Length: 237
View (cartoon, rainbow, N blue to C red):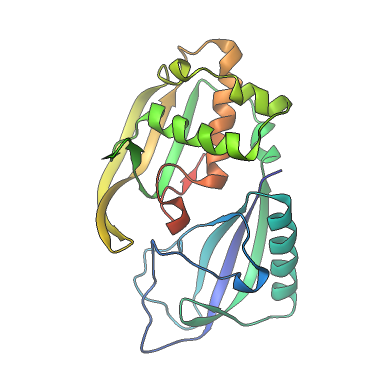
């Protein structure tokens, strides 16, 4: 079962010489817990610099049972005891932790229209080319690849793994309200889009709709597109 923790933290000791909020860089806030399979969002704020005693949010998605157990236990204890943690050159404490799991999505009614809000810049890759548009086929193709890596077999897995690739091409964009943002990842300039997109599944055969719905819900935990390990492709369903 996939778990995502929405974490609110507060800066309790400010590094005046380096207050920059670092986005789209690999982060290691849980370095003492070893190498875990997780996706850490960038800091959910429009601020460019940290401020003392101000609160911010990150989202931590755990992709394995081991990660869920270790991260969940750590966050609960750190919050309870007010443990100070080093993060992006600042000292922080965890104020609030909310848990979301895949069942929160899988129990929802299957929909013909899926609304996705892209919170952080998103891009897709096909071959050597990058695409900065909400292409549903590239979105679902990358997401299904991640799904296969985590869920090789099983009931809910078969609903997704049994979807032919050509079916994914029948998902359409009904509407899009997006804008392009310039970002820097791994010391290279890239472009990505943010905003809201409605994906239309009305032309999909009924037997495949639930699986495609589950792929969109699944991408909440893994992120969409490229460079999700750097905080790109964070979405809300």
